[in-house]
Image (cartoon, rainbow, N blue to C red; front, side, top):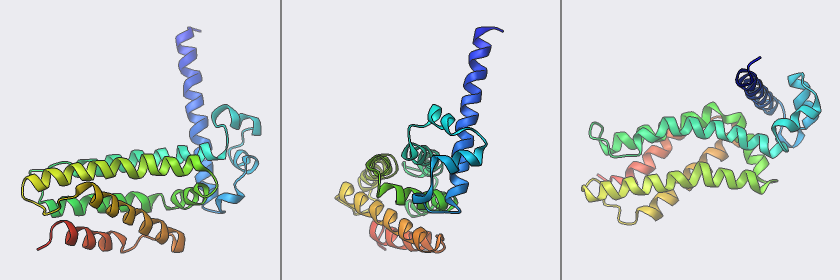
Length: 203
């Protein structure tokens, strides 16, 4: 067999096995808290051996970080189009859609978000990934957008970095609290939109 073809097949199998482990972890998190998730019950769900786990992940927190990576990818696809100056949408509608997209993403991944919140209390690496990949990049993007909108006379906000930081921490806190309470984000987007729009674009 051609060595390049063999390498591609090995890589493809590794990607499939890794994805299967992540899918199994998400399924287990729907049934039990993160604290009860073990390598043994995770790999039993996949049908692979326990030792196979360590070919793809170093520990349980690495699994949670990989699951967060999936969420981050979805979040980026859904929100980035609305976090830049848009000539077709009003600033209010643009921000409303960004919030709705973000909340929808978190809602679709509520099981993982709940597990991540539990894992972050035990593992600094999980908390750091949440902060550095899910929260902080969007603080910078929002602040840049607010600067552009302020220059265009679309918002009175004069301290975009502080405002962006406060609004996104509020989003994170409300999303986590709502998911941990009842796994539902019903009404959260509307609540956040009301606060954001009143703050950024007072009428």
